[in-house]
Length: 250
Ligand SMILES: [Zn+2]
Image (cartoon, rainbow, N blue to C red; front, side, top):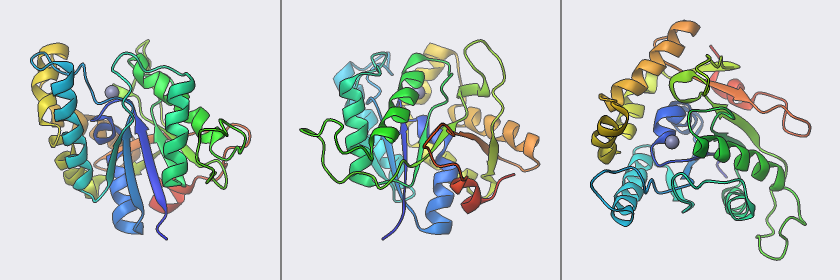
């Protein structure tokens, strides 16, 4: 059976900014199954559509982006600006982990520009730990426990900096030069977001911003485009760098 990589990030387009290059390579070079989950449907990500309408649009965009590499999109149906580390969100993410049985999990940097990202990071860290624990919410959760805690990787924070503006150097980088066009195609599937970001963040050139981050990381690591990651190495989490071993670090 194919091995599985899963990203659990806050919003429907976060994977296409932060880790779609590495996931595309896992898919194409190693035949892994890829799952892309967002905590919310991006219900606040519009100045013109109401929350239900933009959620419907963005779930479809998430599915279209995932389909570019034959991945599966999941929405965990929390709400924008309301992602918390609580029992409900931990149950949802643990349930998803047990459903797809990932060897590799990607989530946000523990320090990032907004709290939905930081809370998601915390929830995913906890869910990875809970995945193999039989007695955790035993009356509600499916019993196909994970055989062990998966390899957990934190993506670069947005704009590669923490909330205080400090650079966050990655533990290692993955060369995504060969798949940058695929990553751009996936990001472009989020058509509703370019206009919104322009209006709210003053950010034009939606796809260009992603490429600029890739170029920045790439320049530091001697390749054209790179994604940076840090591995969670706390007690009982896997200590070997499976992602780096499969894709090579730069
Ligand atoms: Zn986000």
